[in-house]
Structures are given as structure tokens and as C-alpha cells.
Length: 91
Image (cartoon, rainbow, N blue to C red; front, side, top):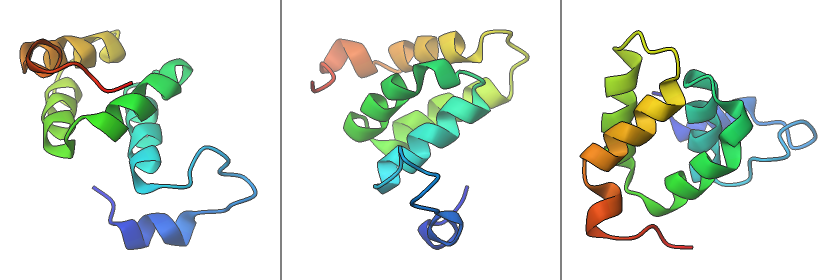
């Protein structure tokens, strides 16, 4: 996992239009690693509203798998962890 210092060193405000906060950087990271950049805005919302340890736990589960659709597996794991059942995601 990258530190904030490493992220800021690589940050280019002219090219990185989606990134202005740390949670957005994590969301872009998730979208790329899960090979699901089409749903980048969904990962932004999740990274903003769901605690980081929960997202990291689901991410580690998906990274260890050989799934074809890693984004769907990530969402399934979040559901299994009870993210959506116990409390609704803030709008």
C-alpha cells in the first residue's frame, strides 16, 4: 500500500483530474487493480463512505482470487462483510 507521501510525489494536477483528496486516490487504485475503471465513481463513493479497513479486507480477498470479474467479487465480499445490511451507504 502506498503512503500519502508517495501519492503526493506522483500527483500531477494537470493530468490527475479525478484526484484531489486521499480517498479519491484509493478509489482510483481500487478501480485499476480490480480492472473495473468503468465504475470509478462507484469506488469513489465507497471509499468516501465505508471505513478503509473494510475495503482493504474485501480487496485482499479479491486479489487472492482468480476471478474474471473482480469488481463483482469485490462487491459480493462487501455484502458478505455486512457493509450494506447493517448501515446504508451515505448519499
